[in-house]
Image (cartoon, rainbow, N blue to C red; front, side, top):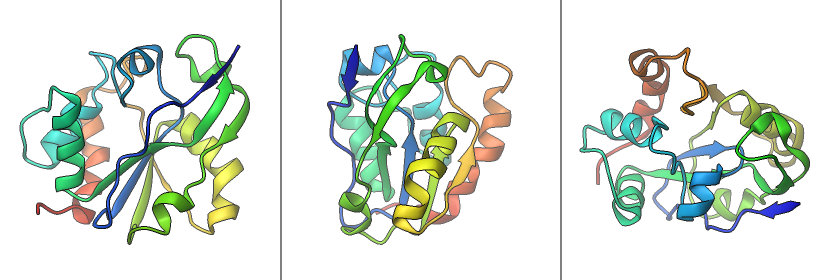
Length: 164
């Protein structure tokens, strides 16, 4: 069955960093928002990097991103996928990143995990003429990476974000 990414990107004209995932997980689709699995470390990492408390509600998560110049979206707009497993993604159609890139001064693009990075390279890099930095996945499936180790890599976004 083909699934469609049903929630909007998070950004405003002051966004300076774009973080791309691959496609929403089952839990994210249920919550209709990014990184919805309770064991996904994304929101804890972003909060730590921004020196903020971990957001709980969707509104708090949006505010955290926007307050620090972070745009958030996924590479894939629709695909066939089994559950939440990126390795099962087939027949991917991608999001049009110009929606964000034409609206704000994105200084760096980061991708969350190797699948998102491969999809970005395959479908987006030549179209937009920009490269991205691959960061290790925050997914609970990436259990080999401790929070501290993830933080060490993810802290690279810190030089591009600011508190407003």
